[in-house]
Image 1 (cartoon, helix red, strand yellow):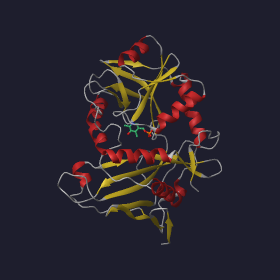
Image 2 (cartoon, helix red, strand yellow):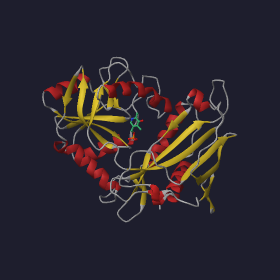
Image 3 (tube, helix red, strand yellow):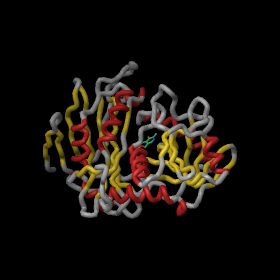
Image 4 (tube, helix red, strand yellow):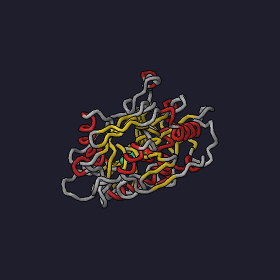
Length: 361
Ligand SMILES: *Cc1c(COP(=O)(O)O)cnc(C)c1O
């Protein structure tokens, strides 16, 4: 085992290289999402009021107290971002600072300690460098990085923990949904409420969404289109993605706020849309407006956007026991063009005019 130490302005990161690799066990032509992990794991602990003991070690299970805060009271937030390999073989992180800042926003809402930005970025870079062989070469494929921050203090009293762990694991990723998905407009359950934690990537939001999602699956839909908790009249998100519609050639999407996560992909897609001269409206989008547009043949496209999938097109939208079918994928030229540009920027084929790619190696 070789041991190295990298010092950031704040906290040193000790790197213990694994003696063996599981890389040869993975079929990169048949990757599904999140079930293979790389050879290393990043772990750091927060105690005595500061982040310390930061290490990159051979991937392993970790031992934690059964009374820990995260398990009992949900002090757990996470992130998802990707590393890409360009045509010259160099490895880049896509907009990592946006994820780093969002994790701190999520953490603040759950009364968890802030993670110094330079330390967090160095942790991501060092983990990707250590597992660089795991960043796929195929254009559109990537190495998905999953940071998770959670309360580790053993306590049964309900108060913010005094001890936390920041763990980062990595998993090679292909395409998540390759086929367009059928989605159901949810008018009963809610994902997030005003004043709640919808804007935080907080673990409990995802557990709470599973039950309605399973009910939708039983009805033949793969995903839910969430509407506002109060009236169920306005769209919010789709599953764990932001949602966009193209009506009369214009992209319309709900504005981010306290019930809607501030997606990095959302911002990237809107930016590229504006670049190519597509009009974008960030405003409340009602179910009525979309259903009417679908009935009148003016709903050009509808899709979810998020890091795992980039763009997940909808094949049909279910509402009031009726399915509204959308155009065939090949006619959805605006979203296909934007997805293509994003893929090419990430692969280093197109110029990265917005400085989204941060070189790692
Ligand atoms: C992660 C997530 C998104 C997408 O955010 P990206 O930064 O684009 O990955 C959207 N909505 C929810 C609820 C999410 O958890």
